[in-house]
Image (tube, rainbow over all chains, first blue to last red):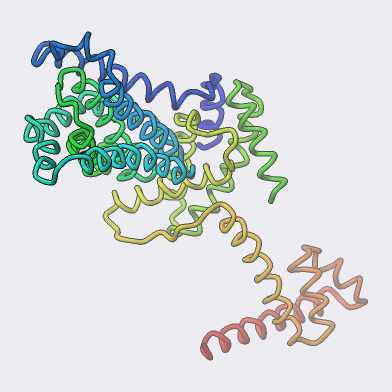
Length: 213
Length: 182
């Protein structure tokens, strides 16, 4: 019985690229990002001053901060998609953008009078920002879960959280093209929270959706 | 063990590049390792063990793209096997914890259990008369026939049979007493 199985499997062998895992995850997140971008353009639209803002540092800081989360969490997911691979180092990389942006936010807040700090942190859209990021993270999260189900994660919660965070970064990247908040403390708190919500969702649904047979 | 790991990894890399002959050898080799792995952790139900071996081979095949060529190959294999085992317990509704084990400890257990058995056997045999010890070693351990062993000791075949039979009886009595004492 097992003999014939071995024969069948050997006959079914086709070469596999070393980039198989990375490619699969990239396709998953890519399809989701396109869908999120279309939704964002239809529902919210680009920020009206985007051409002017593209000449400023804060615009690119927002794009870079969110993109770095997608890439680093994506690389962590690339490890967690492989049985027995070590993902610890790649998780630690995430501390760099986090510390950098919170450090910049602290510097910006220390420059203003104490009473002016809270309005800077809250901006004009703190109550909707994390939820919108969370919303735009769902299509890339769906794409990444689809990809992950063909791979072989064995720590389903961690893998779920990693793809959740990568999707959160992608959702925030898309939302940043609409959002006209330009204070680093706002980005540090609410963008990070939005991405964290998506990671939390991944952590919760990982064991339910990533199980493979 | 390092030699085996190196061989298997080389076979796996050739398989990932599409070498079906290498792949067959690889699957044949890991198939027996998987059987041992599941036998040790499951009830001795052979059908259950067989199912898990096959499921794991299929998973290895379908998800072979998740093997990173710089990774320890046996660690990858046994991580998949362990996932399958946990999944099996989960589906069969049994709550059992599966100890975390990497490939190294799996291998170590393989070797030490063999060494333990040999050591135990020597201990037991030493309790018998020298002539009986020699007969049991020849017939039961090395696999000679009664006639050959009897010839070598210069006794009749019947005498050899009787001696071996009595010797084994005494050994099993020893084992029983030993277990009762524990």
